[in-house]
Image (cartoon, rainbow, N blue to C red; front, side, top):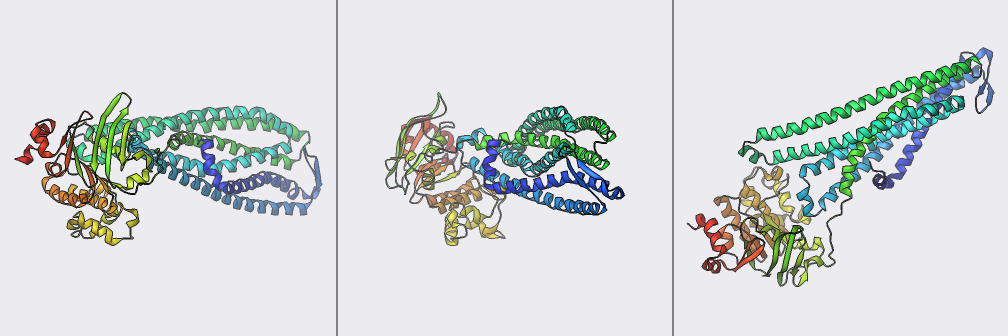
Length: 592
């Protein structure tokens, strides 16, 4: 995890972090006190008759003990164990709450950041890749921010107070440990860097796998129609093979770190014990304190060993968080507008509009035309002429790189994006519906209508002829339509899309090849629904179907990003230009 980024998400929950640190400190203090209590019990209960005087080295604290003191130490040992267990439970619970809160906020922000990216962002970032960042990558951070963080705080507190215990018992022995600790921690740092790099590579491959999986499932018809099942399976196997090797290297590296740390730990313990033996022989500490030292030393080894695994887990989270914070560092879609668009009163004007996706590769050249309020304008042309690009400029999915687009004489860039897009409805060839009910998908056209205006939803459904098929379904409008509406036919999906646009009730309508993928029977129903939708609206139509184009008040013909012709259907046919050629090629079957 990136510290500067995570701090922003931890700050609102600072009290939870403070509570977790406090409880972890209690665990550490009591864990460190336990060896002392055990040593004192050993010196008193087992040797009470001699009533020894105990001297704690370094601090030179002396006190006389007796059998009564031994009983007190036994009670304190039991109480310390109970309190430590309660504090440990509380620390884990509070830290888990903190971690889950941080990850919840992080996941919400990543999702919102993706939602508010410009359309160009989605063209260069595959869906599977984005899904992987929101799910798998954040999941890695979630583990580190809750379970691993709780363990880190606990083990850190125990480590600190056990070190204090060792210092109190014999500072010389502690000084030797300071020399040996770097030898123990160097492998931890090296393994951490290695695991971080492997984790980053693994997460990228996981994203690629998610993308292949999504494309293969979403495009299963195309895969089957081209008999590409084996090719897709081979592509998927290649990715999973790479993931296998990366994860295997990561696991083997992870597995090697703990045994290596264990070897170093044992060597350190042996050296400590040899030194401590001389102290016992020289009667510079009691048997009980020696036992306390041994217990503290053994306990000290455990958090040191665990720190290696904790560090590895954090390194995996670092690798994943880089991909998450890369998304969060992106700028949201630029909204330079300051005005609110109330509606369309006069006309839409394209004034010398130019556009390019990449510099020096223009897509549109000096496009100029007007669409009067209530007029239907058709845009036709060969594939790649720039038709869809042209209409995508009106709702500012992209901004024109030259010229202006005006609504009632005001530049669209002066309007808030939200205000502008609320006044524009779109019905496209690629119908996007959600895995919900028919009613919910129609209500999506106006969020305020969800459950609030049954009458408005039904009006839109009847106008779009959705009622013709929805009424015959067993659950009617409460029928769930499946992912992307795949339980319905193409015509039925398109009519729901039209009902959604009717409910939105925007004054400007864009139809982007709304019927091009439908058969003749489905098109007839959809065309009637479109006529109901177009009534009283200013409409720009991109179409190949004769029935839609002929009803347009005016047609402009695009080729290579330029307007080649403009006029009514009859006028353009008489001219025998590009439109006439397209008419003969594309509409010949319909005409016959």
